[in-house]
Length: 328
Image 1 (cartoon, one colour):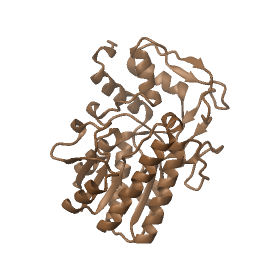
Image 2 (cartoon, helix red, strand yellow; image 1 turned 90 degrees about the vertical axis):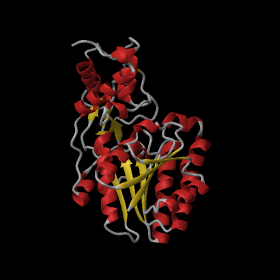
Image 3 (cartoon, helix red, strand yellow; image 1 turned 135 degrees about the vertical axis):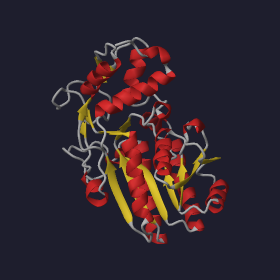
Image 4 (cartoon, helix red, strand yellow; image 1 turned 180 degrees about the horizontal axis):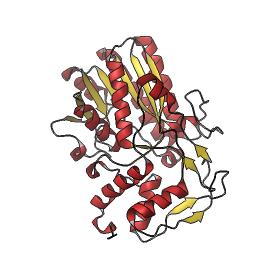
């Protein structure tokens, strides 16, 4: 069978494309390259440049490549930007998904995997977030992801499509330096960016009810995340007919922001004593996944730890910022 990966030239998408092709799956990538990078893609993979919401392009790709499953990663994903531009996020993440699903139904594709997010949960006050934890998103981004899940499941039930919604927690690291994240929106690259400019990393709030006073989060190595997509895709390949799966993708372990600052200092050899700034609105004290469903139902479990995430992310950062590395 052939899988279409939308957004497959992005940070996460390229890792998914790499994992699936390495495992022998046939893959075609659809990406408008607005944030994706063509050079990230494995050699020989088919790239179609275009938008996942462009019905004409999608219809052509599904037909020409006899696509039997879709992994939908293309989306807007910055929480702060979504607050400033909610209509953009609803247009791209909800209306765009509707157009893609219409094409999938028309083409008779029977497998659809959606990239979702832990942002659907909002800020629940629980030790571990399970898939049954009530969803109460607090940003337009989280709202669009939850609406997308509803749409995917409803479409699956109505048209006999096997569906899966993967709720990512915090993604970091790189399988190889060339595939590293080029954005500066998450805590690890944000720390790197500050250090490279000779500035101290920033921690927003150190008075939370956590062991060291800083926020605790669940981090997943992007290569583990890609392997999770492969595990779900292979389960879906075993048969189609309306099955539904919703799973958290995390390690089930919490790491504090202060501990990440310590790891960054150890890995980079740069002084990384953080400065403390006021809390940011909407930050939960703790957000850690219960990751047992993926293990119980698919036999998958994350294998890489936080130090490996920081080390691999730093190698990718130094590839793009050669002057950042210091002799240790």
